[in-house]
Image (cartoon, rainbow, N blue to C red; front, side, top):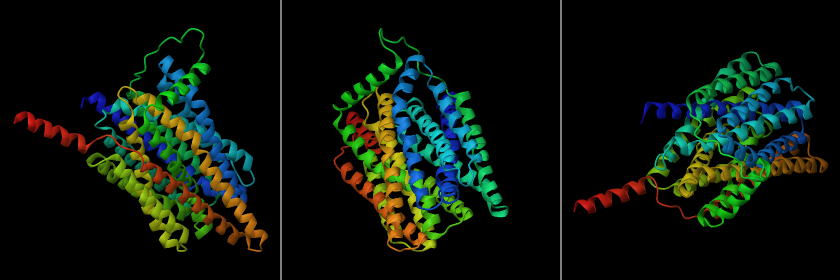
Length: 442
């Protein structure tokens, strides 16, 4: 690999290293539990958390086609990536100002930080086909997830000592500023080293970016209708991905409500999840490369379904740590291999367009899962309280019903994936090439 190309790939990895720190601290370990338990409190905290995540997902789904069109026609993909990353970083730091009772302020700032984070990923993921050949996509994608997980681990390890030794809500709030700085610093190599490959082009006569953006989206919808396997995969992905999003966004809340885990325990739990995520990214990436992406995705989904079912029946804090370790491996495998399959199922020369559709479709559906979970958990808790259960027991019962909704999304998505036929890739392609070479030599 040329030195410049290798440096670009390293820069792409480092971006994942930084944005995974955001996910680890804001979504997984720190702010989610703080917002639900301290800022809002009670069953309503689950509802508002799920609604905030859902709104952010929906905003990205609506805005992405317009931003993608502007980026394509102005040759400014990196500029949009920079703008949305800056949005995520600034509003992550602003979460410092959210204190007890600031439910609406926290919700607004979270929507702004999360929509910047998710919107930036649309452009970040679209860079994958530019830095990796089709034969390398699974490996590079898996490396990205693994290195990203290491970023989350490092950030959590850096804030853990302060939370353990000092404690209090001020340290929790300061950890959000630290995370914002960590995220920003990790993105610098990408903006310095990775070239902008999108050439500017004039708008068609009579068009503006808004109308053209949605025309292109509808055109892609229409075109994708002729790629049956990709369409089947997207339908399956939309369902099981909601289950993954739900599990990620409510993991800390589950730990706090079901097992009474304190902030330092939640951080240790998420460090374990992040460590096993690194292992999962490599293991399931190797399975995809050696055998097939679909087989790897099947295995990771089955593992995730088993973990969620176990979590529903589990009442032990110790077992919850083991569940988290297994979930870390599985969910990273699901996400990484799903990204790989897009590159394998997309027609030649259209991977960027299909990755864009994949991102928009994923964001447009992902608001459903967290909103559904938050609503189920809150309504069930209120119902059980009306039946005489004390508040904590009612909340725990509500969270367990929410766990069942995660399992339902994963199982339905798994069944839909059965009907997807994957083209030969990775190991199968190399084996076929060797057979042809031997035949030619004979």
